[in-house]
Image (cartoon, rainbow, N blue to C red; front, side, top):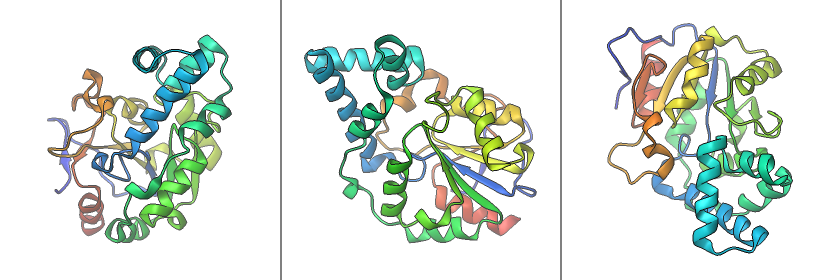
Length: 238
């Protein structure tokens, strides 16, 4: 599907974009792969094992922390003093075989003028594993993960500010691609062109059903259900 503006306001364009910033999970690969489902299950298992509680109770605590603290990890760190590295290593110990190579996406990303980055609430290792499975690992100039952000998650403004400073990116010349609308609020405020990547007709994860992630507001410049086609359209119209 070609790019669409999300509202009546004039969306920002890609004419001067020279830094292309991508979220990882459910953005660079479709939710239909169910990869994040495996991570989600590992989070519940970590909590159940650590606190000696049943799976239902662990799941409830996991979601409570997610909603209150922005990520399950942030809640575990703040409330329970959990070692974030231990948690991240555990939850990302998954089979990436659910992801298939995407040569068309790889070609579109490779053709983007300027630099390309991954900005994720996950780990560098997880991002590298996912990118390798898709066939795009060597196309990025940098990966900024939750550890680089001192384990402060998106959508906190400090995450984006640290990212921009670390890589020397000018926000007014950057575009941000995300599957969660509330993670685009700060990028848009900073001057980025924002894109919400949301699958059409897929059984998506619970995260995308939250009210705050509805397509609304001027912080979402464009919406697409096909990232590859979207990037190809950008390249065609630049």
